[in-house]
Amino acid sequence: MTLDRQTVIDRLKSVKGPNLEGDIVSLGLVSEIFIADGKVFFSITVPSSRAQELEPLRQAAENAVKSLPGVKGAVVALTAEKQGGGMGATPPPRPKPAPQRPMPGGPAAQAGQQPAKQDVPGIKAIVAVASGKGGVGKSTTAVNLALGLKMLGLRVGILDADIYGPSMPRLLGLTGKPETADGKTLKPMEAFGVKVMSMGFLVEEDTPMIWRGPMVVSALRQMLRDVAWGELDVLVVDMPPGTGDAQLTMAQQVPLAGAVIVSTPQDLALIDARKGLNMFRKVDVPLLGIVENMSYFLAPDTGARYDIFGHGGAKNEAERLGVPFLGEVPLTMDVRETSDAGTPVVASNPEGAQAKVYRDIAAKVQTQLAAAMQSAADETPAIVFD
Image 1 (cartoon, rainbow, N blue to C red):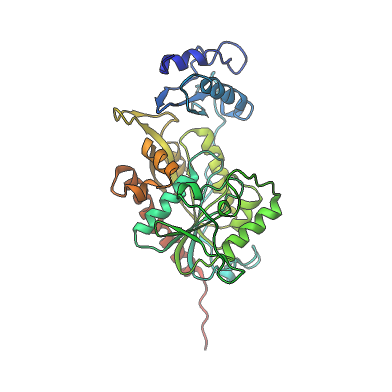
Image 2 (cartoon, rainbow, N blue to C red; image 1 turned 30 degrees about the vertical axis):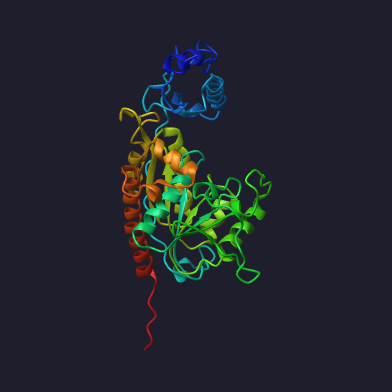
C-alpha cells in the first residue's frame, strides 16, 4: 500500500464525527494533510467549548493513521474556527485584555506582596521558557534560544526544569552523569559552550519519575541552587508544561527576570498559553514575549508552505494582550532531525534560514530582557544619607 494523502483520507473516513454521525472527512473537519518522511500532519476542527470532551476523537484519528503501513508517526491537533466554523459552533467572546502589570521592583517594592526571592550567585538574569500545555515545542525553542543568546556573546546556561519529561540530554547529545565539585555541589554538563543541568542526567532515560509536588519542588531548588553554574549572563529555564505546583513555585521563589511563552497558532493551544501568561503576571514576572512555534510547514521537496495548525494566532494574541511578539518559527524537517541527533539547528547550521529565525528571537529577547531589568532597577528606591 502506498502512503499518500488519499490513503490517509480513506482511513480517516472510519473515524466517526463528534456526535457519532458521519465521519470526520465527510463532515469537512480535516485540514490539509501533509506527509513527510513517513510522518503525517493534520488538524481536526472542533468547537473550542468541546475541546477536552473531544480529545478521544483526536486520539482515535491519530491511532487510525498510525495503523497504516509505512506511517512512522502522526501529529494531530484539535483546532477551532474563529467564527461559525467547525459544526457551526461559535467560540465564546474573548475577555478584554487585562492591563499590563508593572515590572517588579526590588525587595522593598515587593514587601507585603510575596516573599523576597533569593538571587542565585553568579547568575545575572534567569529567563523562563514556558507553555500552557505540552507538545508545542517548548524545549526545542528553549535550547535554540539559549544557543542564540550564546551567539550574541553572552555566557549562557540551561536548567531543564521538566522533571517528568527532561529533554535536554537528548536535544544536546549529552550522556553520563555530572560530577560533584565538593561533595555537595554538582558541576553542570556542557554542550556547544552552554552549561546544562537536567534530571535526565541523574536517572535513566526510561525511568519514570513517580514524584508528588513537594519532591519535584525540592529537586528543582537543588538543581538551581546546588549547582556550580559559575558566572552566567543568562540562565534559560525550560519550564514544565502547564501551571501546577512546580511552575508556580519557580515563578514565586526564583528571581525570574522575565518569561517567554511558546504556543502553536491554533486557538485551543492559545487558551492554555494564556493561562501560563496570566500566571506570570500574577506573580509580577515580566513577559518578554510570545513565540509562535510550528507557525507553518515548509515542504522540504518543493518549498511549499502549509498552514497545518492555522497561522498568526499567537501574533494576534500578543497584540491583543499588549505583549511583545518575538517571531514565527516554521515547522521544518531540519529542526526535527537536528533535535533528534542532539545537534540543535542553531549550533549545527548557524547561518541557515531556520537558525536565523531563532537568532532573531534571541536578539529580541535580549532587548526585552535589558528593558525589563532596567525598569526593575529604576523602581528600586534609592537610599539617601543626609
